[in-house]
Every structure is written in C-alpha cells, then in structure tokens.
Length: 320
Ligand code: SF4
Ligand code: SF4
Image (tube, rainbow, N blue to C red):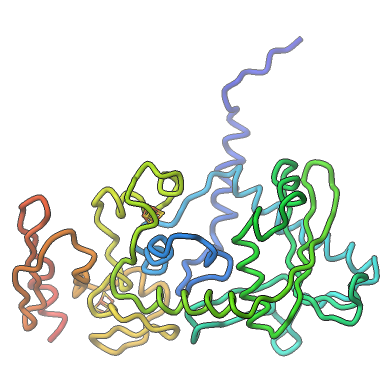
C-alpha cells in the first residue's frame, strides 16, 4: 500500500496559494463598522480595525475555502427555500443589489442575505433571512442554546438588519456541514438592544482615542487571537495612513475628507496617506513635549525614554 507523506504536496500548496490570491483579492478594507462584526465584545478592537491601525487579517487558503464554501452554499439554500414555497427577495428592488442597511448616520453598515415571505410558521410576517453553515459541534451547540447564547455576534448582526429594514422577525437558517441537516430559528426584533448597538457604534466611530481594553491581560483568550494585540498590549506602532492621521482624528462617514486639505479621499488614497501624516497623539505611547503647527511637527517623549519627532520638512512643504 502506498504511503501518503504527511508533508503538504507541491500541488496542494499551489492550490492554497492560488486560493489566497483569488479569494482574497476582492476584500476591501471597510470605512465603517460592520453589522457582521459589531457584536465583537471589544470596543478597542473594533476601533483599531475602523482606523486601519494594523494590517488586515490574512487567512490561509484552507480558511478562505471555508468562507467561500459558505458563500456559495447560500445560493443553493435559497433555491431550497424557494422550492419549499418560501418567497425569497435576495435583492433590493430599488437598487437591484443586496439589501443594505446604514445605521448610526452611516457609521454602521452591512448587507444581508434577503427578506422572506410565506414562512410556514408565520406566513403573513416578512422575515429577515440570515443563512449560515456550521460544523457539527457548533450546530449542536446552537440547537441546544439558541443563537443569542451560542453565537451572539449573529444575533447582534440580525438585530442590526431588522432595525435598519424595519422588520420584526428574522429567519435564521443553518445547514450542518457534516450531516446536511437544515434547521431554522425565528428571532424577534429587540428594539431596546438594537438602539444600544447603534449607540455603541456611534460612540466607537466618534472616538478620537482607543477605547478601553476588553482585558488588560495579553494572555486573555480574546486578546490572544486579536489582530491588534501587538499594538494594544505590545506597544507596536500603528500603520501610517489617513485614518491614523491627526488631520482625520475626527472621522466622518463617507465621503472621507482630509481635515488638512478638505480633499475627498478614496479608500485607496486613504490607505496610502501623504507625507504630511502625523499620528494623532493618542496613538503614540508617550507624552507630547512640543507641537510646532507651522512646521507640522510634534515631538514626544516616549515611554521608553527616547525622543520621537513626528513630521518634518516634507510635512511642512506639503502643508504650504
Ligand atoms: S488585544 Fe484584547 S483588549 Fe486589545 S483590542 Fe484586542 S481584544 Fe481588545
Ligand atoms: S494629511 Fe495626508 S495622511 Fe493626513 S489625512 Fe490628509 S491626506 Fe491623509
């Protein structure tokens, strides 16, 4: 019998690299907080992501294929719903695109899977549709506990969509990836919680400094898997781009404008920034010693005792 080596084959590796190139390419950084992530318990993590303080999370080919499989499965599950007599509106007739919601004056946005009618349990009620696939263990946890306990981020996501679309019920449809079981849970709109979520998004969006940490312990389980942990707990510098710049310390929802030149900037332009970039002081681990507004220079005494001069001749030339 042929022995299959434990190391990854060249072909498998090539497929992973191809998936990393193809499946990552259409993921653009978000300029807003997203309904799909606002259920994260850490304000600070959401704020760092909103400010593009760290590199985007990179997923390996295998993980990207899991996401891709979930997306392509949604279309098939919508076909099954339609075959069962449920009316599925997966496009907003006003735009021809996915249904979009925009809350908190544009600070919190998202796109949902659709709106359904003629649901057997309540045929007269329009429901938000949210589709997920789960592996067996997670599926069982959901069936035991309900989505609010088992997957609170999904529950929050659905509250955002119902709030934005004026719906009172959601149909949460899940397929078990291992057994192909399909089951649903009907979720009620919770206006009080939706307003709290919206207010939280507005507060994080408006904050000009990193909000409080979820935990001061870098070993805390949520911090260990957080893409911002090296900045948050390790003192690593944030990236230089328009969203970490002093001229944009007060962030606006789209369209984004540079606070220095008033020029509107695209997402690609924001990612690059310009030579006049100055960190806003709450992002520097140190004390401001002096600020020269004419030259566009801020001098800090860092926590490690060194002096750091932010800005300089190029900044001055560009600000003339
Ligand atoms: S490392 Fe922890 S406290 Fe810091 S942003 Fe991430 S989750 Fe929040
Ligand atoms: S000064 Fe430059 S880096 Fe700062 S917001 Fe304006 S364009 Fe972006």
